[in-house]
Image (cartoon, one colour):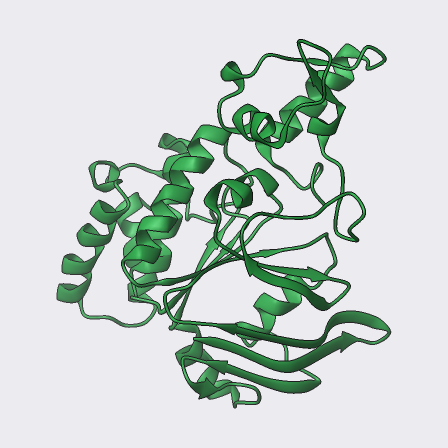
Length: 291
């Protein structure tokens, strides 16, 4: 579905990707992880044809898209659905209108729109909110609308850019379960994320990038140890259990997905206000913890 063969992209003296080779098959669910500036955004922009590679070859659904004309780019992008961290909904349009708009800009027939939009809204469990406006929805509901909009034109690939970044842990897991369901139905999912705990819990394929290079490609967890280049300690490293022992990795996952089930305390030297702020950041899985 997506193939990178020895792809290199530089921005002057700055590195985007170096000799990157990845083969994402149809129906795969892949997490794209790595620190800020590692090359994740470059990877996505190359797929979307926002930038051109300096070297190498890129294929999408069997078509060589390495160097194509501008007129061909819209057709390529129709094969891709995008889900964003900040939802990017049109505030003056209803849920139905937001999703329908994605079809209208492609000049789809009104009958097709009337049939397709309710189907997709039901798929993401937001059909009962069809006539609501974005400011009447919760963050999780807004993200479901964003996913519906990305799916409405039947893309072959769904690219999700930090889709849980603005969500609380429970809602984030609801969205992950939805994305998993969409993947099971046949859509290839590529998700960019810093949320270590979500990656660990989902146990899907993980492609890790560091300094422009693909450093790991395997199924499993986020997987970085303290001596690895990509490891950045999160707040959980500064927590101990009620017996004074460091939290296990399983306890950290439990804390992320259900804080009420794990009794923890901060190390004695930590300032209580700092602890509260760091805990909030950790539970939200944001870049301020995992970068």
